[in-house]
Length: 236
Image (tube, rainbow, N blue to C red; front, side):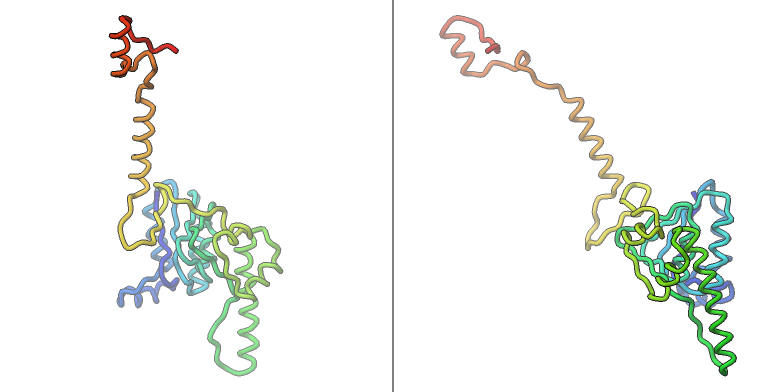
C-alpha cells in the first residue's frame, strides 16, 4: 500500500522549496506526485494540516480523484480549509476520534482600488463555488447548506463529520491504524495485546475440564474409606 502524507502547510511547488530549506513541514503537488509514484494497488492518505494554498490543494485533490487505485483517507489530527478539500478525494474517509475538520470561505489579501476589490470579491465567490463542488460530491448536501456552513466557519468533531457526510467512519484502533496515545509512558501495542488475547483464548480452550470421575479423592474421603472398608466413590 502506498502512503501519501498531507502534513503541514499546503503550498505550491516553488514555495515548497522555501519550506524545505528552513526545515518546515509542507506538502506540494510535486511532492504528492512523487509519493503516488511509489504506491501499490491501494493508496492511503494521512492528513494533519491547517490547510494552505487553494490551487495547490485543488491540484492534489484532482490527482487523487484521477488515480485509478482505491484511495483511503485517514484524518489523524486537523483537516482544515484546503486540507479538508483534499480529504474529499478519498473513496473512503476515516477520521480519528480526537480529530476535527473545518470548512470556511476562501479568503485572500487584496490591495487596490474599488474596482480591484469588486473584481477580487467576484473571484472569491467563484472560488467558493468551486470548493462547494468537492464537498457536494462527497456529502450529497445541497449547495446552499454547504455554502452556509462555509460562511459560518464550521468546525466538526469526528461524529459531526460522519453525520454530515464529510467522513465515512470514525477510526478505531487496530493493527492497521495508528495507535493514538495520550500518556507519559509507553503502552503495549495493539498487535501485542491481540497476540496475548489469542494466546489466552487458546490456553483456555486447550485446558482439560476436570470432571468428578477424574478428580482424586480427598484425604477425608480416603480416611472414611479406610474406616468403613470400602473404596471411595465420586458419585452422589
